[in-house]
Image 1: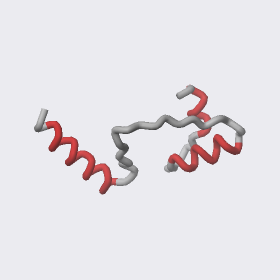
Image 2: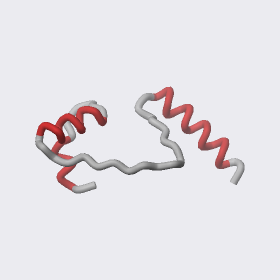
Image 3: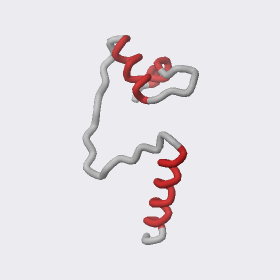
Length: 62
């Protein structure tokens, strides 16, 4: 991630979609990376709590 990405993040609560729209409007490239290990969106309190619980369960198995 380049530093200038922060100039495209609004100074308010926003989501990744807002960032992508800003980048597209500015004709900036958007790159992606494929992962095989999964992804957990923690964009709200409920999802965060569930992910945290799963993390603690896995941590206990280490």
